[in-house]
Every structure is written in C-alpha cells, then in structure tokens.
Image 1 (cartoon, rainbow, N blue to C red):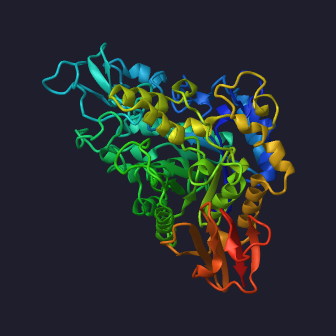
Image 2: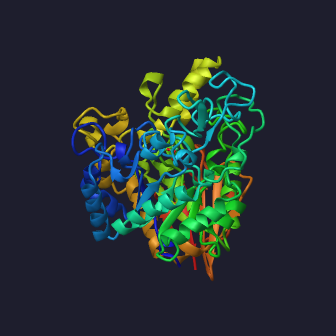
Length: 561
Ligand code: NOJ
C-alpha cells in the first residue's frame, strides 16, 4: 500500500498558526516552536499553505516568486530547518502548489504585459468583444465572472487587451496550452523535490485546462456573485497535463504525495484522476459534501440547513465509488471552510466538545486519507464576526461589496458571511489562555476568538477528555487497525435524520460506528443495527456507552471479531 494511504495530514495555514517575531503574523519559526504539539497529536504529514514570496492579495495564493520564502514568513533557511525538523520526527512536508495562476507581480506576468514579449502567450490575453470599445461596459472577451466576484477579465489600457483571472485581478491565469509554461512549472516542482519536500497539494488544479476557444457561458442568474465553471473545469487536456507533470517530476516513481484541489469534480472524475493505472494524482479534494448547506446553483453564501441524509448519501457515494480503484481524501475543514463544529455540529458550551469529537469520528473512520486543519483538533469555532470591518478575506470583502451593491439586504449578506466566510477558519490558533491566545506578542492580523480563555491547546492537552485527545486516539486507530485503513464501507440507516451509522468490514472483522448528529437523544432499540453483543468498544464520546439511548451528539465505535 502506498505510504500516504495510512497517513493523517495536518494543514498549517502559516499566517494564523504561530508568530515567533511579534509582527502579528504567523511564521516558519513559529511552526518550529510548535512541533511537539504535532508530534503528540501523531500526524504523519504537514501540508503547508503558501509561504512563497507574494503581495498577499489572497494571503499567499498569489505568488510572485515560486522559489523563495516571503519575508513575512521567514527565509529559505527557515524552511530548510522545518523540512529537516519534520523529517527528524518522522513527518513529511507537502507544499502548496499554486500554478493555475501567478501573482500579477510575478516577473512572468510583468513581462507578458508587453505585447511583443515571448511571455505574452504565457497568460490569456484577449482583445475586447467584437463591436465593443475596449474598456467599456460589456466589452470583456467573455461573460465569465471571477470566483471572487466581478468580471473574470481585467482591462489593461497600455496594450488595449484584457487578461483572464478566475480569482482576483492580481491572480492572472497561466496558459497551460503553452509548453514553456508547463516546463517552467515542472522545473520549479523539481527544485522543491530536490530541496527535500515530500509532495504537493495542488491548488484548483482542474482549472489548468480551459475549453478553447474561450467563449461565453450560460447566462448567470446572479451576475457577478457566482459563476458557471463548466467551461474551465476538468478541461480536455487536464489528464494529459497531470500525467505529463507526474512523469516530469517523478511523482509516481518517487512516491510523492499529491492531492489535487478540484472544483466541480465528481466521483467518476476522481476515480479516473486517482486510479492506480493513471499515474496522475494520489487523491483529490471534492467540494460536493461542502456544498450541501447552500442553495443549489447560487453563491455559497446563500444558506440552507444541512439535511443529514444528503451528507450520508454523498460520503457513501465517494466511499463506494473509490472502493476498488482510486483513493479518497477526507476533510471537514481547511483555510477556505468554516469551522466544522459550528457548521455541522453545535458550538454551544453544552455540545461543543461532544459534537466536535463525533464529527471527527465520523470522518476519520472512513476509508481514505484524513486531513486535520489547524485548530480542528481543539474544537475551535467560527469567528463570530458581525461587522464587515472585522473581515480581511478578499472573497468575503468582494462578495459583500458586490452583493450589497446589487441591493441585497446587508443583514442577510452579513449572516451569510458569519456562517461561511473563510475568515472563520483563519482566526489565530488558540494556544493558551494568555494574551492573544499565545499566538503572538503583537497585534494579530485577524482578531483572536474571545473563547480562547476556555478553548486552547494547553487546556486541551492537559484534559484527557478533550477534543485533542479524541483526535489523537482517532489517528492512533488508523495507524493500528488495518480495518480502519482498508475495511470495506457500508452505510446504514440512510434515511435517518439524526443518526450517522456505518460499518467497515475486513475478513471476519466488523467495525460499527453509530453517531448521533443531533442535539436530542435517540433510543437505540429503535435502530436497525448489527448485533454488537460481545463487541469491544474501540472509542466512545461518553462514559457508559450504549446504555439505552444515544445521547445528544454521542458516538460509539464497536469492533466485532
Ligand atoms: C483555492 C485556495 O484554497 C484558496 O484559498 C485560494 O483563494 C484559491 N484557490 C485561489 O488560489
């Protein structure tokens, strides 16, 4: 079995992890100071969000130099130290690879602004729509909107043309059709592999092959607020590019870790891209299970309550779809998603700990590679922002401007942001109950959550009943039990609106998980579950598990045989 199929990944968003120099922004030396926390948790792989040189328009997902570290985060020497320190502790380092776009301050793009430059074709430069005056309303080459609101085209008066940016205007899309672009990317990846990194998390990688010629998409119902991605995702040359990259960097040959972040990817695509026969990717991040609490077809900030059977059906679809070929990534959280305990759990004092544990259990006992996002292991909650001034995230700020600009009710817009803004995940990690939660001695770039006096790593590590120790046990179970890594999945009680239950089976052994994902008790005798007489309880959220009813958010894991 490939090594990363028995691994658990921990994501570090460096800006919010730990600040060593008091400038209010986390840095690499801050990470080095916290390695004991990661070792104690027991994770195998660290995915480091971008630390490259960047104007920080999108917190580092806009890169101006792929082979240097931004002074905000430290130096290349610090990064070398981090690689060495992680390797010494038996952990691997996976870098973020952001190559659908660069920063507009990257020398490649700066050069491409000159129409005569041989870099012109490294990006998507296009003339205005025929019949329109360049720069005038509606003159954009296509009707696409950016994922960060507004048109996906930026007019450049100097050359009279537009460039494509599916994200912010400071993130121009690279033209992967040009072989020189691809070779430059592969050379950069090899440079990092030679430096000792163990793999890549590939940012929005299924956008790199666009359907040509670039053409109008279907009219958008909420112009400027959402975007029909059909013409730019999973494009005709995607698999060719992924296979070429794999060969050029020796991804399969060197057993490098890869995960491709992919918008609008379904299980069929995922099976193709992650098939053992394909030599493309190790696994992908899907968004399907993260879209179940939004109104279909419109912006992610248009909320609807989660219907638990939808979540169960979707996770089961992916478990079954990749059972025989391909591999799943398992995640609830990352730097783009709100905190799971505030989202699918209950972050009240009464239920926060139990619901965070149970959500962790539901995810970690599936087949695939689980990801823990910094602070998830502490049961950290959403930010609780109520005013637009509290937000820093470009997606949130642009959405607010666009939505209120077109007349949406401000209170409704702020409600959407409070639930879904990416800043919910980006408040500083809560290390202790001291000043700024021990994150920084300076003024944190984003406010620390006031609940750090109760929710923090020092308290969690000292408390055997904490979310931290529960996650530690979940990670141990994956390492210790083949049935957790490889057992065949079967969903139970699909239609039940409170209970998430499934089995994993390996030979004669059966693992049964029963979880109450609601705040009301569920009598156990009403549930049609396998007989657990004589079974061992591997893990439970409450003392005296299985006594008559599943308490609110309670979960129990049995091992039979
Ligand atoms: C996905 C990243 O996770 C997100 O943070 C970023 O804004 C976009 N890609 C653009 O790079």
